[in-house]
Amino acid sequence: MRNIVILISGSGSNMAAIVRAAEQGRWAERLNARVAAVLSNRADAQGLPLAQEHGLATAVLDHKAFASREDFDAALMAEIDRHAPALVVLAGFMRILTPGFVTHYAGRLLNIHPSLLPAFPGLHTHQRAIDAGCRFAGATVHQVTADLDHGAILAQAVVPVLADDTADVLAARVLSQEHQMYPQAVAAWLAQSPMRVKRG
Ligand code: GAR
Image (tube, rainbow, N blue to C red; front, side, top):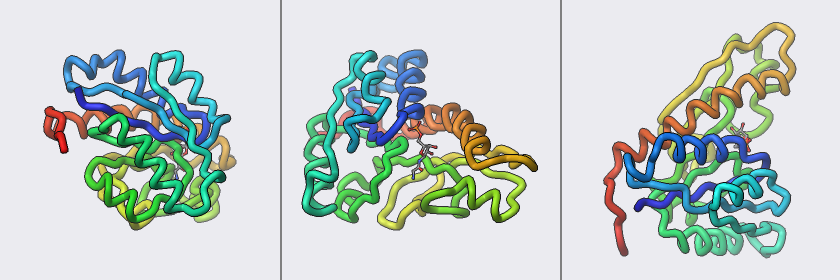
């Protein structure tokens, strides 16, 4: 069975969408894959109780407890690797990752970003799209590389920007599309990658 580890920092609604899709879509039988664990850098991440309700392993590593980004990422890698993941999914994980971390999971590390990349990498994407006068906004699922928000694009969802949108209203419209797109993109990644678990 191929393990998926999901990293979250906040509400975890994308994580929840993936967990539900895995259950309802019978990923274990069809794709030889399951969500094994949900990890967070914040103890108050709202997604953690939900993950536990679904019987998933959870762990919290508080980044503030580490002297450096490298130390935190090393500890996070050790926690992730306890589950020997075929795929690591960033779902609202709000930490910049070190090159060592990204290299370690090269080719098996996905992220969802709330803009139509390559437009608006970084933060405050919805306000920036409104301020730029964009008629469309959206979200992107991409491979993670050391270059922040610039890896190969796997999927995009597009929504209109309406005249009276605030950043919050636009964010909610985009997020509902993320919940459709991310599980589909993860399933597509699993379907096209080797079914068997690699050892060593
Ligand atoms: C989502 O909109 C996701 O695209 C964004 O954070 C939100 C997390 O929501 N991710 C980033 O901004 C990454 N830089 P969720 O915790 O409810 O899934």
